Length: 130
Image 1 (tube, rainbow, N blue to C red):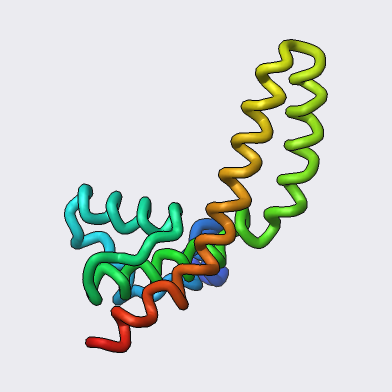
Image 2 (tube, rainbow, N blue to C red):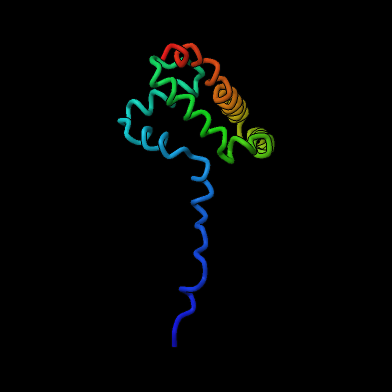
């Protein structure tokens, strides 16, 4: 008996959909960086600061653009509001300090989301120089 599975078209894996929006050249350049440099670029983008040089600025803008395509970013308000409500209810039930922790985490999430949008125009002067 012969197997007919070889005549079936291969199904794309679930992981390929997430990688479809990644520029292979950017991914190769990003992965070629050493870990401290990647960490510094990520942190500066997240806190909304300008990068140090044009190369880092280009990578930072690319990193922010990639993060804006991720499901957690696109569906932010869909998961954010219920999590804040649930965290606040848990804070009332457990301890009042937990309410402050929930509000601090919420503020940080909103600022990070804003800073991913801000990375493009913030690093624009460095990108124009090169």
